[in-house]
Length: 284
Length: 162
Image (cartoon, rainbow over all chains, first blue to last red; front, side, top):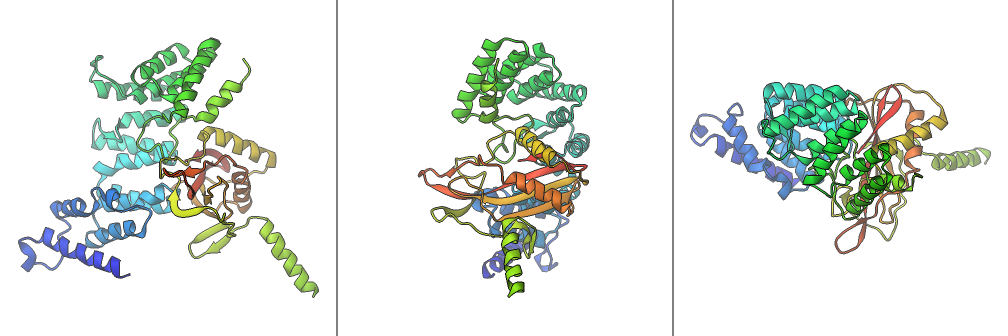
């Protein structure tokens, strides 16, 4: 009880100092309407918080609550406060905080909430709405290394809105390259286009994009698996067997999709070693 | 004496089946503890350490298994949203009894699904037996926190989280 109080008071004091370098004598409260004040709170207490405090400890909540107590309009404090809830399936606690962050700073957090809906709660319709709104606020923006269109594509893929997904993924690639075909495209953009064409039963294009993905990241276990599935559909069982073996080896060597949040949530169409081994057991 | 006997019998039966217990920190399917004495609990979570503790099957595979399980039960339910079970996996990779349940609607507001539906999903959860053993660099195995969420649409399981 004493520790949080000390922490709170130290925040309060620091906030006064950071906000009131000149007007300290004029005002007794922090000027939270001043974006520089809010930014200084974020910079001092919330940036890189994960390096100092485990988000599964009460201290994490204390830091976020203390910042909110000083300035209730610091959007990042709500977003950070929600992290342990999101990662442990407590969505009733997480999303009101995410909504508050979006309300306070839509430019920064609309796409982040869309990302959570797309990857964590598989609320694909809700995620599409967020990403479309985010696109209006931050045209051609990125979230977690990918364009908003990439995530919209994932959502449409999962909703089986394949024509929309194709447009989204093409737009995602266009934003990455600006039309310059010599530029490297993110391997997971290529991977998901391959998966999309596989689902659309366009095996020729599926093969083309999965091979492009593997040209950049040859151990990509999911791309190897889906390429095996493409060859299975094309009745090329030798190549099916070959790519299943590559996928199995990649999983055993701990390769994965390489996405920031892969340890917390399964990405759309993501497979595991189990599915690869099951496919290997299937009679040809 | 007879009443005492019946009460004891009811108490025994109630422990044989999971049911919802409301405690100050939330609702539980099962509050019994079955600590594995050899396991150390450092309150780690499935995503920590160099071992990755998500259930080692694709979400779509778990979903198919859940749907097959529910199909056998052949009950129809309503409601849309999320049913989450939080629990621990011991250092032998076994799910421990104590299980918290969280329920929301599609907009993440607190919500209650049909108790029987929650019970069926919980029974399915207890059939999942491939949990990973969480090892730290020293090679020591630990108990860890895990969860499974069922995304529900019109009374049917349509996705699995994580």
